[in-house]
Length: 84
Image 1 (tube, helix red, strand yellow):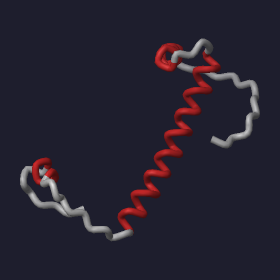
Image 2 (cartoon, rainbow, N blue to C red):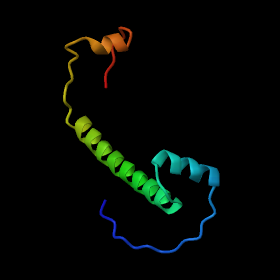
Image 3 (cartoon, rainbow, N blue to C red):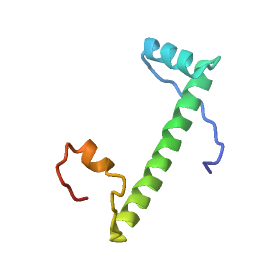
Image 4 (spheres, rainbow, N blue to C red):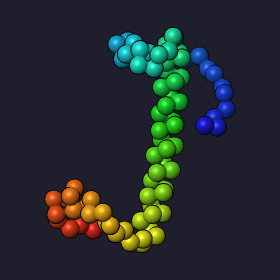
């Protein structure tokens, strides 16, 4: 993540139960730390999603042929044939 560190004071009205639960899940000590870590997690996940989407697009455009040499697709698909 390459976001510049610029902190500004904010006044927020939040659901305290959700904040407490997030704090417990994330193992943070303060509410500020909880919100910061939650935001970092969301940004990181979005970046991963973008990379995965790009890789999937490249894979699909490559017109590669996949052969199920072990027969696993048929087991999963109950013997029905399918194409990607």
